Image (cartoon, rainbow, N blue to C red; front, side, top):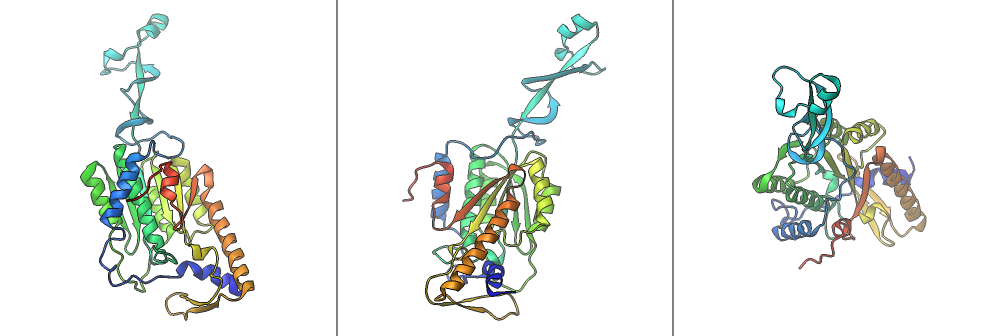
Length: 325
């Protein structure tokens, strides 16, 4: 394996250790949560993908797969004993001489589900914040947007051990979920962490059809095994992918030397950033990997967004001209 391939494999494991003041503290401050709430309130609409039918039993603004007493007429079926005679189709009876009952489409509100990657490789940051902190900001904003629309929010926190939070709504429920999303990251340990593919499989088994799924990760362990799992999710749900990318995962600094941690039990890799050939090989290798990830995530017209710590992604994505105070 050549050096650029080793860098491509290991760059996702470059870690920035949490300082003593960060250990035990939330990943983002209460002031930042407040700013995100303001941002969610200023957003005009939920920037979600195309609407699908849903099986979720919560009144809302999507057509449900469940037929019942709603506002939109769907079809007529033969009348059976015990049916409510208020919904008899008298016009059809006048034409056929047989009794038919009107059926309607109920309006249902979909459930939002967040898959937040909180694994050790997300604790990398070459700037002022870690990738994990950027991911938490996005997850928090999405939960606040859903609360504004009176949607229920579920979450799968990808960490060791993984945490599943079933759908909850209301102010208290959403705040409790945000607290779990924003919980402090414990010191790094050599523990077995769940894979992204495991999480995708769990979502497939746990969610009602028509949910809105937001995947928030650096997707470093995404592979060809992920493709059918993503396709199954995108076929039944609205799928939005938020790809968290650090500047160091695009290109190396133009000077100096650095150590890249290669994983438990392996010696760190020393990189000479003064070598222009190495910087170019690294940038090309990482660009290829980023394109592979994007190709996998754009399955079945799923939405795909790149989130860079150096950019104000949320304001631009929501179309809000908001400057934090």
